[in-house]
Image (cartoon, rainbow, N blue to C red; front, side, top):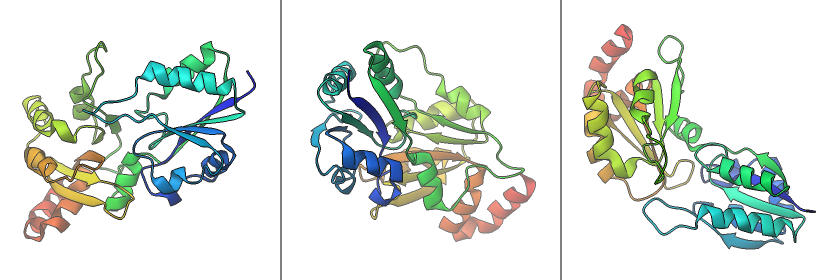
Length: 255
């Protein structure tokens, strides 16, 4: 093996949130295997590379992971710089470990280049910290989705145990998510925010409560969306609905 594979985080969308290291690797790349949500301007930084789409989108026809693994190994046998460009951060819900394991078994050298993940981008859009002294000391990132054949995914227990939760790949399951959390004891009036297309000009933020989640999800436009839960969102909910500001301020005082 002569080539190196770089698993690169493309960030949440905006090209100018790419790290300097990621931009340098893309400029040197011979071939880039990229996800469907990578911004065209980010991909354009790979000026000399052959670009191959291998994206996955929930509920749509996707490239098989084993096929991607093989393509990465084959490319490393022919090229010096091979890039696997992933949305967000490769190490968070990016199936990076499967690719890492395949590269290790094949004896292929690799490097991870982190990226800004959707959770922190969404928090930045809202202007709300996922942690807050005295209010939120536990943050969990979860997804309700599990691939066929995977062991059971008790994501609800993780959300119930955390002060703040960020849910990936869940907007399409909003009705089940709301029902499951309420049934397991999460208060129906828990503040919720949906952030769609975080960091991009078309970004949107929708606020409500856990009981409102299905209706909020129906109002999204099909872009990548994360769902945030927790009392850190009370102030944002008050700003979105000024009539309830006094009530929420009282909740904050008693939190």
